[in-house]
Length: 391
Image (cartoon, rainbow, N blue to C red; front, side, top):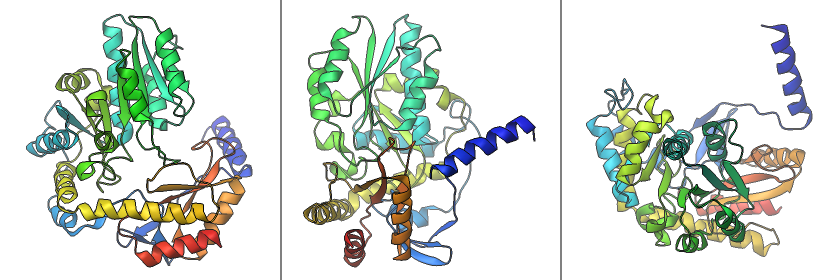
């Protein structure tokens, strides 16, 4: 290895280690939807986004019968009948004209942002992305990577859920500039919701596009888990929605949902789609199974929301301060990186897998435990969780 590279690696990782920010992996063996084996110990998993327990649903397991790769990009020979059927089902579920399967939620956001930027530039228009400060890293990265080096104004960040700031930015923009407001529906680290109703009201007065990442809203909110946008009756206000299939749906990959014209645009301008091998047809078949389960077993959705309300109520009644909301993402703010690590270890010793979240994933000074609930957690496991957190 190059000596200079070795020095860079050693120095950078040493700084992370000294500041309690060094990341590493450990082998986690899934047992079922809510239990894992780590270092020989069985733990109740409160660190997964498997909100409905679909990873181990019998119907999903039965669908894994003929795994195969797509063999090519979707624009070559990788778009099979399985892909077409899954995309049609996702579009129907989200009530959009079309949908496009992607290898991941990250790449879905990247392809959507790339397309928006390319569309504006192809028509010699400037474009600006107005992004919530707490939006997922994939959205921020996508905007930074898509805009040119000299286009430093392509992104403006507004304080979390600050609708007045969005309005000021839009009002101050040149009339012919494409404005794109970018937000999550349920925020991944705080578990609170975007003020989508207020943003939709702004759209009645101003001309801008709205992109909503429904990674953590899909499956949990809306009819048959179709998302928070659907639950609030705001489908017509959203131009582009992103689905992550690896969370509540229990599969992997992602999807871009929108008008047929926008999906056609992604096929022509979304480099993250154009130059990627299509997802496996197996994934497409599993998506169809997952959507059917969402329709057939609404009790899963009801239970995870009931559990979220129960845990949140018990914690706040005991004096803990939580961000507003009713999602199954529950952050316990500890501020200090070392405190978050130590508390996670204590919970680990009590049979619970809960991970510390530290900068740069969250802002400095907001290190936390991020608890996520599943419909498959038992009442006894939920009570044990609350008891341990309040001990």
